[in-house]
Length: 354
Image (cartoon, rainbow, N blue to C red; front, side, top):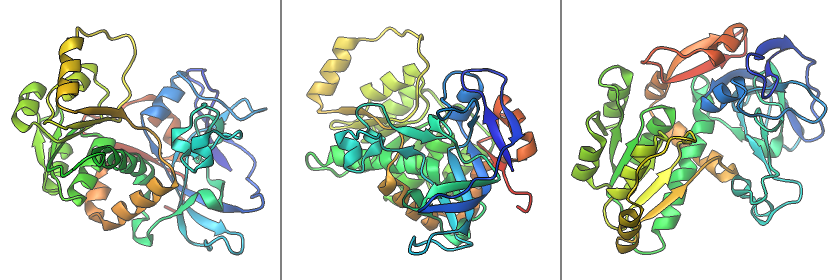
């Protein structure tokens, strides 16, 4: 079979190559790969920034955003031939730490977790793949064209869960949320915000194209002006920050409503220094009981919540998030180049029949 692979930490090594067909071990599903989503993590691994191949392997099969169709399943697994499934990315560490032992492997304390397509485990970017039944998530049959969005949706499902858990340390009744960034994570965060019944606003730099239209189609409000002006006008109860832009991160911290919560989901690049009034920011956080937290990855419950959110969403709206579909043969180029400014989400088509 063919697989999208890379030699980790070696820029320019991305290639589609022939690899042996996988043989499912006891308790595993054999899955025909349909789509693989591409995100910033994949671009960074392709650029040689990080990534680790499995022990004894030179190359790593990429792909942590998956969608496939079951070819075979163990008896009693709850899955059957033809089911749509997504594979979970992270596996708990073998020790395990307390969080992993409790099923919260997304909060691993010792860093010994492994991740499909990223860290010490081959990913889902191949024509066939296997996955343990316990780490497979059933996808609504009506989501065959868009179910690949489940993994990024799990990330924002966790972000919203964390916001709720922090908020419920006291009386909590948020009304207005601001999402910064209208990429896939930001738009999916806005989707869940509207499903929660919040007044949702989205801030991004572009002034035209699909992003403003997608926000408006949710019944949310799109902003492209000065970030500070938007923050001061809205004074949001909750901010989901999905850009990782350093200046915007600090502005989000400074301009929430009292008892505000800022959840950071975007990863910032190191080395960009900003002048910050640390004393003033500390005073604001303390006197207004504000909270800033980071959130990344997802556990099984977040994947299940994401599956529910996607099943409840408008299918046409979800389909509009995927702005570029490329065949597996062209996947290496898709990982090393960027699309147009109107691109939101790129997916790789793994099956010739789809």
